[in-house]
View 1 (cartoon, rainbow, N blue to C red):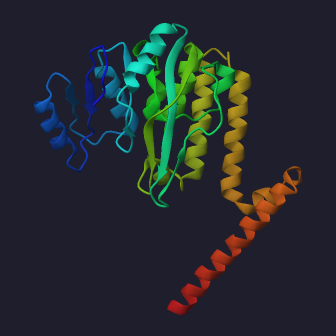
View 2 (tube, helix red, strand yellow; view 1 turned 60 degrees about the horizontal axis):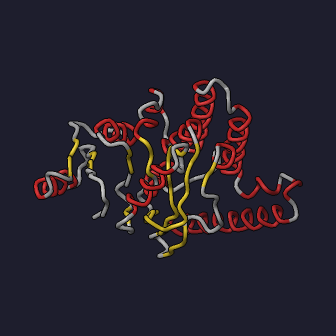
Length: 277
């Protein structure tokens, strides 16, 4: 449990899943009625819709999100970040470092290994990925998010861009949360949908550009170019590097390696099929 010198509540936004989440959350709400509030729905809501219900139910000045796969490890996390935001009125959201755990390989590492400035502008951070579980954001900023956000798959990136449009980001160089990666996560489920992910990224950056009156067009063009390159790389795999002389010699070696092992993998799968016949 968090320790802070200000009152706070825990809002559990339950999306009518088939597991026992609702029953567990109800039991905790009964034990801590002054701290835990359960928000439910009668249908299995999408991730963005579920997050929106939680945000709209919030009554606080600040909000912090901790999704089901992640967890906090610093009992003073909220206190430290709220203190930072209170002392920096130009900062609209504060994030920290986190530990990334890949459960399929039993590996753990820091989310950020390089140094980060304590105050970041739009130009500093618009291409960043930050651990959602580490963030505390002003509720007044979340309340202005556009209605088309329900169509976005990567809601975290929209919130990052929207916050940067409203003000600066603050960073505390402390580890306060754990970000878990595993084979059943939403990211893994979306990975095979290459074209759909690319089209959704294009929609995000195009609509954001319109919504902000084209104040960040140069940066959005860079993000669009990166999304297109990632899409081509996923489609071509090792050939992506082989077909780009500018990336040689390092890119050529990477491409050759990926292409070579891709051929071996496909050959192995073909041999297995032949043996099964």
